[in-house]
Image 1 (cartoon, rainbow, N blue to C red):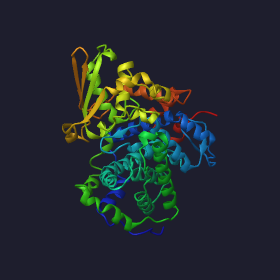
Image 2 (cartoon, one colour; image 1 turned 135 degrees about the horizontal axis):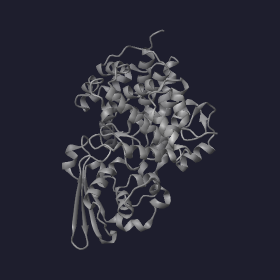
Image 3 (cartoon, rainbow, N blue to C red; image 1 turned 90 degrees about the vertical axis):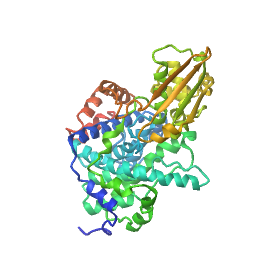
Image 4 (cartoon, helix red, strand yellow; image 1 turned 135 degrees about the vertical axis):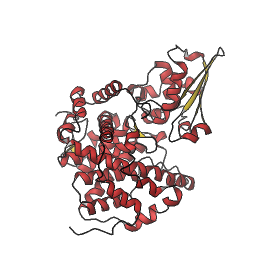
Length: 457
C-alpha cells in the first residue's frame, strides 16, 4: 500500500504509534477489563436518561446495523458512536483518571460499534482500548495546560472536557478494530489529534445539551477520522508541529510523558465511582461521612458546613442546581442529599429531586473553599477536609485523602458488582445476563457481549 503523508518527525508521535502494538502485562490487562466493563455498564445506564431516549425516538437517525447499547435500536457507526458516548457520560458514573479525566468514555463507547462490526474477539478489543487509553491520558494532561491559557484569553467560558483527546481515543481504537495498517494509523492519529469539539458555555448551568452531546460528537468525529484515514485521507504533519511543539515549553517533560509508554501503565490508576456525581464532589462527601460516622445528625441542628479542598473541587459550589447535570456537579446538593437520606442514588438526580426546595436552606449553609494544602497535592491526591458546626457548639471533623474508588482506596469487588448490576437494570430487563456477559468480556467475541447489553426487539 502507498505510504500516506510524511513519517513522524517528533519523538512523542513516534512513541504513540509504537505503543499501538506494545505487549500488555497480565495485571494491566485485568485493569483494562475493569475499565472497559465500567464504561459499558455506564453506557447502558445512560441510555435510560430521558433526554437521550427522546432524542433516539424523535431524531431521523441514519439506517445502520450498529446497536445502541441499552436499547433495541441500531444506526450507522458514526451516529452509534455519538449516542453511545453521550449515554456513557450522562449518568456521571463512568470511570476516570486523576490526571486524565474520563478517558474511557469516548474511547470505549465510541469504538464498541466498530469492534462489533468487524467481529473482534473480546481480548483483542480490550488490548486495543488499553493501548489507546495510555495515549489519551497523556494527551489530556498536556492539553489541559493549553486549555487554561485559552480560558484566560477569551471573553467566554471555554469548556473543553471532551475535546482533542476524546477524538483521538475513538479514532485510534476504531482504526485498530478496522485492521488499519501502520500508515493508516498514523494518519488517523494526525487527523484526530488536530480536531476538537468544544462547548463555549458552561455545561453545569445548561446541563446535558452542552456536555453529553459534546462528548458524543467528539466520538463521532473520531470514528469519522478513522473512516477517512482508512479511505486514504491524510492528516497534517505541519499541524502536529504547530499545535503540539508549544507543549514542549508549556508542559515539563512533554516528550518524556510519551517515552514511558509501555513502561508505566496509567490505566492501572483509573478510579471507579461509587456515587453517580462529578468526581470532584466525592472527596467532600467522603470527608463528611468521616466526620459524622454512623451518628444520627439532625439537619436542622447544623449551623454550617465548611469544606476545604483543591480549587477544582471548590468550584463545585452551586447552591441552586436546576438540571440533572447541575445536581451532579453541585457539592452542596450531594452533601445535603446524603445528610437527609444517608445515601446518594440515581433517583436523586431526577429533575424533581434536584429542584427539591426543602434542601435549599441546608445547601446555603455549606461553604467550599480552595485550600493551598490540597492544591499542592492535586492531581496526584484528591483530598478534602470537612467541619460540621452544630447549633449546640459541637464541631465534627472529617477528612479524605483518596476518595472511595481511587486505585489506592478501591471499591470492594462485591460492591462494584452490585453497582454494575444496578446500572444495567436501569435499561435492561435481564441485568444478570448482561452482568455475566461483562464478566466474560475478554474471553468471548464482542458481538454476543454487546448483544447482551441491548434490549431484545
